[in-house]
Image (cartoon, rainbow over all chains, first blue to last red; front, side, top):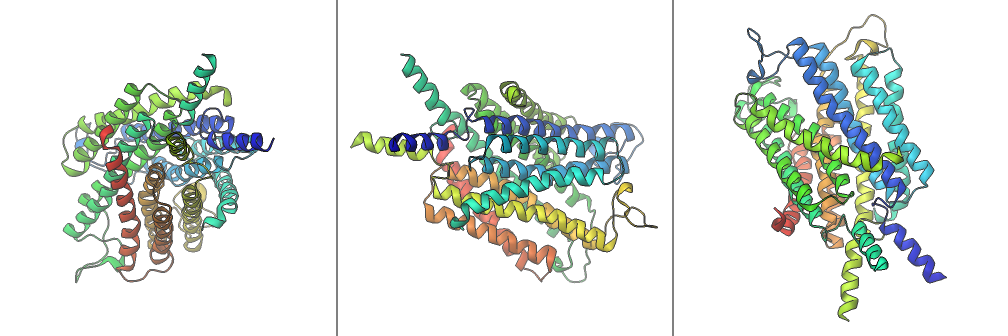
Length: 163
Length: 163
Length: 163
């Protein structure tokens, strides 16, 4: 029995970062959604650049009689939202991948992934697509940040002896 | 035979993120190339700052009789290229790592990694090193983006039930 | 004996990205520290925005009689430090994760993780919290960069045949 338990625990440990682990599958799905969401920010920026004819490089002047221009509010708003994505989602990707390695409860982990991803989609909507009054954006922003802090606390407590 | 096949499939699954998987080795090599390429952007920015004596902080004024300065076109061009790297290559790192976990065909996956990495090296050359007319940069940019979207589609279809 | 050695080597390879590998545990701990450090930059930026009443969006004007404003030196200094974190720490996360897969010596790898993390904490202190004369920041910056280049060299040499 002891041997069996040991084998079982070892197996679980080895398979945490595979499709056999439903927590990892859930992470994979929502991470993919967020990657696509982030790449769409580049296309949204491009859309704004063409709509308002604001280009930052000489070689990008696709229309006649225009010059390079910066600091257009419509373009810059999307770029701020995109930068905010990089500041928050990219560290979250690493943090949640690490968190999975601590073998968290499936229900807790999967719901954190879902809430975090939906929060960031809402963040983009209220920031870059259709600006609404605060605190809509602050709440969406804080949701993923608090989830990341929670995962960090779980992981740090578990690995504190390796400092 | 059934047992053997099962063992084989399980082994593959467990070993996807190890040096025993040639797809992972290929990913590792080209991800390393892209990491080095990204870090070199910092050095290229520093080079431009020293060449044109453009420094954004008081403590960086390494020459006499100069003041902090921003918005120099030579420096900003490199910084835009660097930001574009972060926007595209960093999500790609996560996306392709996840994609490997779906156990893709070796030839397809390895060639995607190669094409994506070469495209981003060309992107840097035509953006930050020696600007050339469009659509050179757009093509280089779109190549990695389309590859990332393809990987996202493969992964999302595979893990859709974990939504 | 040959079988035993083979089993042992295979086991090590499979368990590199699990909590059974002390190198991975050490990476996990210090990556978590750096993720938290990066997220705190967002809060530090927000603190500076409220202290100097500098807000970039209409919907963020939390005080009466103020307008959107950019380019405040106190806010921009923190944002530059934050951007520098993204440029260096995010590629380092991927690079060191990959480096672990090459099964490095425990003492070397763990100390690299420790030095890199402490260097970036010092970088933030001398850049964004309490600016000090150079070369303090350059040294802190170069430390993680050189560590990342070292890991890149180890990995690239090991996987060069998969080019």
